[in-house]
Image 1 (cartoon, rainbow, N blue to C red):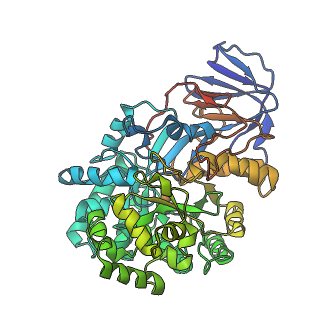
Image 2 (spheres, protein in one colour):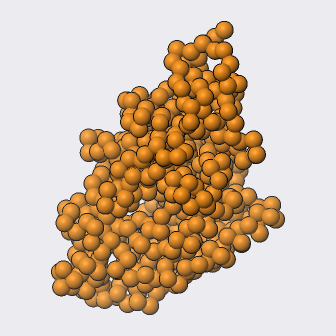
Length: 534
Ligand code: ZN
Ligand code: CU
């Protein structure tokens, strides 16, 4: 009899599938990074045996939406807690490259310029790579606890080929973008992402995205989108995404689906039936969601897109001009066609400052409070802070209602994505450290919104199928040995807006590639994670 490296005895296996047999008593053996299921108590030899009676053994969780592209690459600047927050929840695969922004691919002559811009977006020197292979090699040099897969960001493609310009791509530029995307997908990137509220992605029209999504479709990989509007025009933005999917032939995945801002509250009662109807017709449409009523983004995204043309330095120059600030105030008050306008949909009192490295005393204040403290108009106070921070301010936007969040969580095609933005410093959104235990503790155990098997399927098998992670997201003979073992009676998120990196409760152990990376809620120091090609 061949022995196992690790044998988990006496647990309740929930195998990550959607079927009625997803939960059953079984022992789970791990050898050479692969799984074997055994009848409870079956005779077996193992180097290490653990009694996991009373605990759930599930496939390692897949966070389908992160901005953790470079967090382990930032040398010496990132807190240990920031890097560990994901794996401590049981996340064994993070999918980055979301919202139109990834660390590859770029034309070689633009690498240095884009590397400098990434310092602001990712909070440190994370590099920039010509292709997926270079990105994977950079990560291979820095051992990590869990695995990482990446989408190709449309904003990255566009910014690399065209620069930060507000115009349509020429046919030659579009060909270059398609060729870069094609190579990155062939090398193993997981799909195409857009962030159509962010510059430079927002400068693209529908046709440009259709052409790129068609490249993803040829690779059998999804089109993943942060919609052009998640507020008052969310339904029109969803229709644009549907049009892109239909015309390109790509599967559609809507990122962090929400209907935010007072004019869109309750609108999931229309968007979700629309998605369900498309699915009933045979269209492949899915989404992800995080379990909070607040979002988080850059303070710069509160300003109209024209203010950004030319990039961050051009924005800060415009913010210093009182006449242009008046034009921005007017744009926020009246709206600009095609622009989401978070503040016009909510108000500066719903926008709080999360990270402002040079002015930490402002962190936790709303922009309205900062304005009162400074005796200024809120837009002038926001401009002051952006100028002082050279464009680098993260905000939290309290823009959603609980009913909408619950409806999206309960939709049978929604997966869980933290949308975590792990940058050094400040008080980031607690979703990076709390998302998965919050769903399993608050929404499954406390509220009963979802069954445990259903919630785990969203976090494992459904996500693996969507993003082409073959042999993951399930507990089955021969599957990759990525596992989480937790106590369903105590699992809970610890992270809050005041203490955003506090670890969760109830996680017993986490196994990545057959090695235990978390034991009794703490990291073991093992670093078996790698960049996954799909
Ligand atoms: Zn996004
Ligand atoms: Cu995102």
